[in-house]
Image 1 (tube, rainbow, N blue to C red):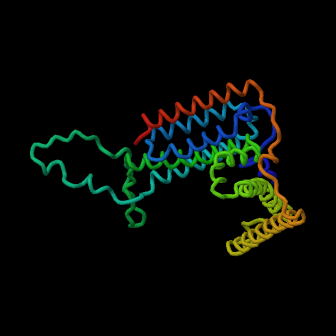
Image 2: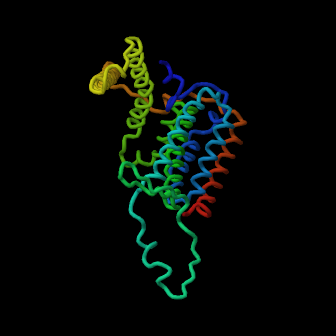
Image 3: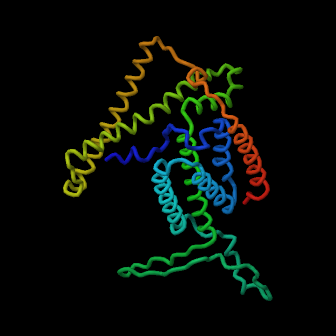
Amino acid sequence: MDWLKKIPIGQYVSGNSSWLRGIDPRIKLSWILVFLLSPILANSIWRISIALFLLFITFLSLLPPRIWWRSLVFLLFFSLIIGFLSIVLPASEASSELTIRAPDEIPGAIVMTRSWEIFKLGPFNFGGISLGPLIVDRRSAELGIKTSTLIFTVIHSVNLMLITTPPEDLVWAIKWFFSPLASLGVPMEKLSFQLLLALRFLPLVQEELQNLFRSVGVRAIEFRKLGLKSSLDLLVTLGERLLSNILLRAEQGADSLMSREGLWLSSQQLRPSIVVDPRYLWMNLGSIFLLLIAIILRCLYGTS
């Protein structure tokens, strides 16, 4: 029942085996913004390209495969399922502009457009009930591609950054970007400290969830024999216990802060002093150069 520990989603994994750890966290955040914002109003080719580019970075990151391959396989499967459902399930009625007038109603009209239908199956009859036909057109195919690539790009890019970036460095980079707000009276030091506590709290939530799964496994509970109602009652009880344990951990953390008379540390104090390797300087410059190229390509060729 230790499968949660084998999938470090959103948790920093210490080590020095990857060149991604040497990239400045501010550059990583800039790349994350590109992965999050560039798919907006972008065509399908651009969305597929950034997903493939993200896979390329993952395979060349020199991270141990045990860190990312399980989460990657699960995320790919989940994204493909959501994309397939987006393709086959009808989202809305057909566009009225495609059925204004039939071509044969216009004398001498020459139809030069290609068919919007890509795949058609059915209709089906089950017990006198007519279902279908199942039609996949260009609009539904583009919707499936956009949905699946967006889910994969957003989740995997953020997860890859959290795996290779210590929480202290990440909070320091966020504070650096929002430092102009400090001149307006925004307490950035306190906000960054609260963000750091939230990032540090994620492993505790995973630990509590793992303990609940272990307790279910030790008691050899079989949901098939319990029935639907008993299984739902057990799941509700487990959810209540999980929430209770999480709130207890949060209260213990608050009590420890109060015992220190509300003492909090800035993100600069929590961030350890790191000796920058000269090799990482060229790596950071190359990352900035690739970032600028990605922005230019998005402006030139990524518009839908």
